[in-house]
Length: 192
Image (cartoon, rainbow, N blue to C red; front, top):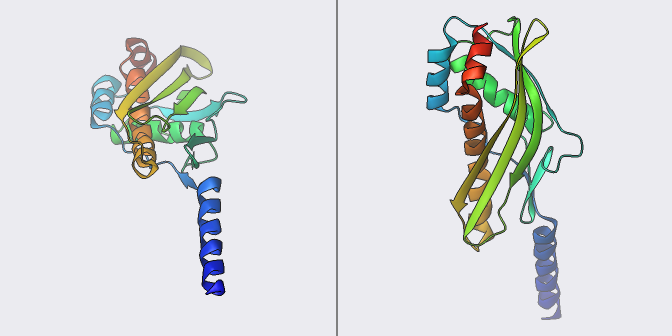
């Protein structure tokens, strides 16, 4: 009897430790937006572009990992969320058939804000912001900050709220890319 109580206490202790420590897991992989790809196809014409580095602003909370309640979400690509955004942009350009790693036109930038919330019980939100540059042979043709924000219904239960928050991250990145590729100044820059 005493041994059964000890085992139960040990199991409970391990379960509590696991919950308090949280889990680290990757963000969902990026799924390209058909709308973004279509915009790039129409506006890109015979353009060829490449992606450069998307840096992360120094000391940016959420640059390398984001906390979703007791869990930590990291980028499944590269070492930070700048790499995630660069890979997402490259996927969109590849599907639009305007990506060329040898191109003289390069899209790069800096991730300035990267936040996703899973702590509220009814509505959660996330914000993302990046400064994008388009350079042609070293000359800056485009330099603007783009933002996206997203809200979604959530739950008190962490088992529901955490996956909802994680699954909304790629949708925020799609919205950020959309804000970039629909900007008339961006279109003009990549056509040069």
